[in-house]
Image (cartoon, rainbow, N blue to C red; front, side):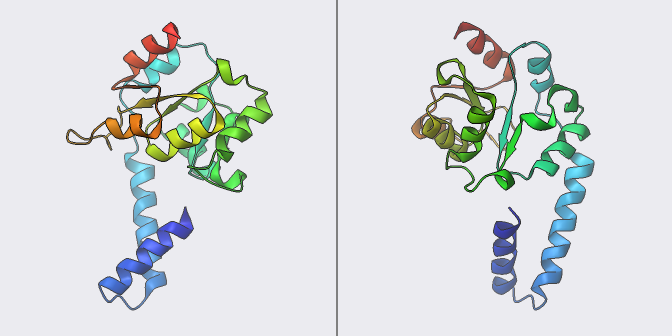
Length: 176
């Protein structure tokens, strides 16, 4: 969130004795937005997964809704999700690890917890899904999952299962 980002930039400004904290924050946000707009890529296998599943799809994210919509368009996945299928931190009182983001989707779509699966790549996301009472599968396909990072942290957060790629995700979901 912007508040967290400002706190981090403010802390860095203090640490490195940067006087104009607001200007530094604006520069960092501009740089981050440029990277997002120009270098964002879909996780390997995500498009394959979306093309090969006919399940209802929703997004629950700690990013703002407008950023999610922009990102989907950038990576060419906007045709797989409509605006109403997105629940984001700016639409609820509490972000992940609180269950609010997922509970919002469950309530709006009247989803059955026994027929719903949440796919997550973070500890906070898994905790949020578990708190809402839904089976959560951990996914370590993103670039933020590097070799020495253990999938055990997702199991420890409550993941039902953890998979390394979208092909395995598809196989697992079809078995459930």
